[in-house]
Length: 343
Image 1 (cartoon, rainbow, N blue to C red):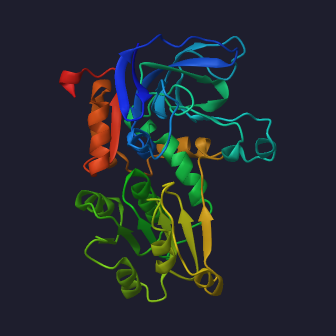
Image 2 (tube, rainbow, N blue to C red):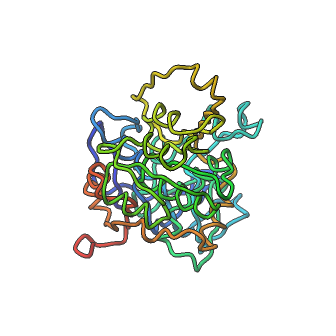
């Protein structure tokens, strides 16, 4: 089969590799319908990498597809079922898993990082990581399941209520989904900060009341002009703007840190957090949120089609990564069945 293999630092090649086969009794083989490019994939392909993948690994982890083969012990799904995948296979036996914190598993095996992922025609995973979806759910929407499940793990930590104010720093796929979720919860005003004009326009379509170009305006000044005390919540989805996030929330407000940038450091007066009683929450991966993500996608409450900027063949993956880097692309889907000339 054709697959996008990370051969070494900064080198991603489309090549023929063996189609995955059933190895363990709980294995399932999935024919990939779509796999979207995540910011993690961009970090993996940076030189030096901001996130490291095992050399020789097929990248991609935001997957939807159809089961074509199952192991002898599989009982909950069958060939023909359409599914989305939790790309993080937890051990189930470490202390964190046993205490119901699988997102902190000490032996986690991440698809597209530690094991082969979904930028391929087929992928193998465990039965426990797949979730059935409706035959009627378009693949283009189902591909949002993994990032949405991660978002829901964070969203339940802030519990936005009608009339509460919110700031979102970063208007990529996750940031724009945060905007839609906050809008559905009745938040007002919702203020979005992003230097990219296209993303700010998308934020408006998704329900943002005010957008800010942080290269030209002071986000803090804009927020306090609209909400004098400061915002009730700030979701930081960039991974490097914690100081900014703390400065835009009110006393007693909450900052949710979603973005990951391992190179970013923040210097802030700890007393500001202490005296203002600001809650700073981190959020990491999905945690029992895939079923809710699937229901939410099937409900049609979120309008995700407008976030999709490109659909590319497998051979276009490097182009897609570059589009993500430059900010020209938001949600970029890779279709292994799409021929390059028809992209």
